[in-house]
Structure formats: C-alpha cells, structure tokens
Image 1: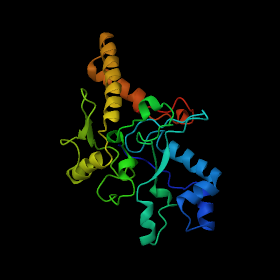
Image 2 (image 1 turned 135 degrees about the vertical axis):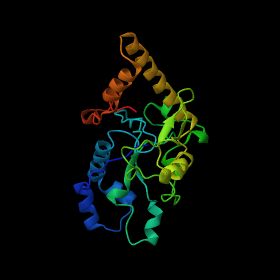
Image 3 (image 1 turned 90 degrees about the vertical axis):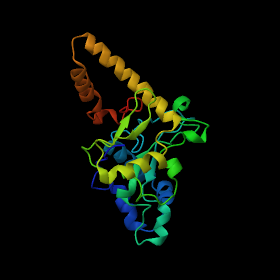
Length: 241
C-alpha cells in the first residue's frame, strides 16, 4: 500500500448527480448514471495509475463478454455509516478508492491467478466488508508519500511492517492493515514472490553487464516505479506492481 494522490475535483457527472439526488445510494448512482460511473472509474484509474489501492496488484480490464474487470469502487468509510451521519458516504468522492476483487470473483479476467476458491485467499475490501475499522487501518489517501511503511520477504513474498523505517505513530495501524485486509493472503504472496524473482534475475543480468547492485536497483526503480499515465487506459498494458 502506498499514498494515493486523489484528484481534488470530483468527476463532473458525479457532482451533477449529487445535486439532483443528494441522498441516493451508490448502487442507485451506478444503475442510473452509467456514464457517471464510467467517469468515476476512469478518474480513479488515472489517480491510482491502474493499481489496487490496497494490495497494489494491477487493475485488469477486459473486453471479453464472459469476463469482468478486476476492478470495483471501494468506499473506505463504510456506506452503512451514512444512516448515522449527516453526510452521504455513498456519493462522497473523497471516500472512493479503486480496488481489485480481492480474489473473490470467479469470472474475473485472468481468473487463473486472480481468483481463488479458498476464503483464506480473500483480500483487500473483501474481508474488510462493511466493518467500521477505518480508524484502525491506514487510509491510502492519508499515509505519507515518502516514508517506507512495509517490507517484503524475498523468499516467501510475505509483507510486514518495516520496524526500522515506519513512523512509530503509524506502526500499529500498519500492522492492523495487513491483518484486516489480509494482505498476506497466499495468493498475494505467490504473486509478490514471482515479481521479486523476476527483479532478482534482472539485477543479476545487469550485474553481469558491469552495473553494481545499487546501480541496477536504481535503474530498475526508475523504469518500473515512475508512473506512466499513458498505460492506464490500455486494457492489456495497465501499470504492473
């Protein structure tokens, strides 16, 4: 999980809809304003550079009729909290994030590695559900952009809190985030390990060309981590994690 720099201006069609139906639910907006939903989706993908706001897997879209996008709009503050508040969390732009299906959608594109029958493999907003835990976990919109919060084991792909670099005030929330969003689901660990192995091979290849390990890592970071907006809107070339 890393900082999401969300566009301050909400999508125009969402703003218009809220003016006309200020108390509507997200489901009604999705059904009544298909163009509005597509606009919201497009802006979220742009803001997040095509990545899930929680596990950072690449959001995969599809053109196949029998498949569904590995994407849905996640409401960080539960929509169920709207009834007890004076604000409509359903339609609040700052409450919307983009997330993958967390391994729960059998018809998702590339289901071979994005879907799992095991409940232990459910992650992101799936285990979170409608629980009121937003004060106990990290909000991708509010975490620091430059601090390192997490580390990853190269042998298992497991994610953990970086105790040396994670700010003390965020450490407990960071731990809760891994647990509550199940970011160490077996499926995610396998995917991370595969990525790490590819990176290790690339570093070794560059080292054979005369680069130091530090130089190789720096060059790969520049090539892979600098966002490429143009890739967000191509169905099969979304930014990878």
